[in-house]
Image 1 (cartoon, rainbow, N blue to C red):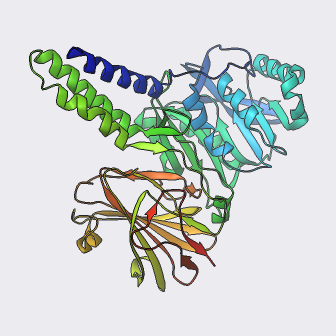
Image 2 (cartoon, helix red, strand yellow; image 1 turned 180 degrees about the vertical axis):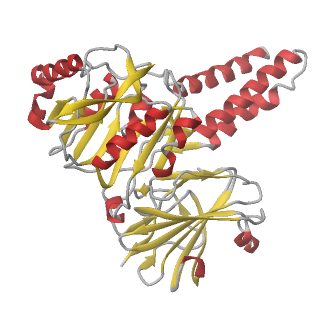
Image 3 (spheres, helix red, strand yellow; image 1 turned 30 degrees about the vertical axis):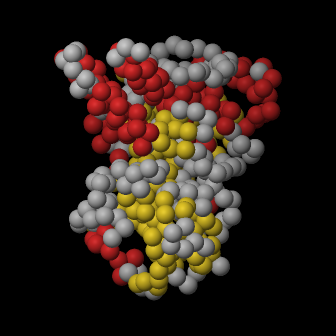
Length: 459
């Protein structure tokens, strides 16, 4: 085998990963679109008025053309907060990218009622005809309403703008539809990677995802107006996240791994080109795949027992102890600490279902995660409000781990076992539980699997 062969194999592997990351992997079977047209879709940017029920109401006009087709990843991210919540619900969809609308129709649950706002009467008529004459959609009956504006006084549990908006259009869309969203409801919209557009919506965003696997890179914002009852977290499914890039049916890789593998692969190619007679390129080439696999994100089967507390990470139990910690409130806490070696999966998962109510970041050192000094390492504490009281999850750095990735802002709902961050290259996670409400089911030295192993159970 020539010296170029290993490089060719590495580049091929990285190209396959990059293709998956770019959304060019194997495609799902194509279905007929709900609207049948792929004409230009415009973003919202200015206002006009239309008469609805005898009243003049402001609506948003189309002045900034946008590529109409959203990728599968962008679509799944955009409607993810709607599809993860249980029905029956009153839903609102504004505009209509064909793929997004088709996916949303397929995701409707029994009892859901969807209002689709299409100011273009031609498209509205085509959609009505499609709903009436497509055998697979006739079961929706009168549960999908197509109109040029929502009825006066309408209230919705969730809403989504199915076409990207840019600039001042984001603020105008939120201003128009926010009064229609019920307290604790969600409004989702996508903007380009534009700071001006993002500034108008980030104040209410409980989750913002960057989607690069789209013809036009986007930021998807999920806005929640008013507090959400933490009991709702028990009923939601884990949120879809574009940061988890699927490789196989049971295995994904975090976007950090895609970036790290691509950087090392690129360094190998540059070194090979710069010094063709040297084997210096082998160092980054050999490191690319192991580094990328460090960020692996396997699918996990989360226990359905509502009283179960699952492990926040893969690893070995270091401590199971009862203590007090004034940072989290009075009373005794049961703390279960898990050490993650470099070889473990480093994606962190929520041990219980709840709503993020506080995030505490502490500076400190980088002592070995197994040592007593690790108590004072750099850490990030996520405080969850649950139906059974507060729960705290700590991400701690270690001797090698120097970077905590946290993706659960205040207000976000986390399902049991849902991914919410990771720690790079060896670390430790601690779970704090109300001491008088749970019983530990593991002990020091036990191996645990994130999202699957039950650490403790509520009484």
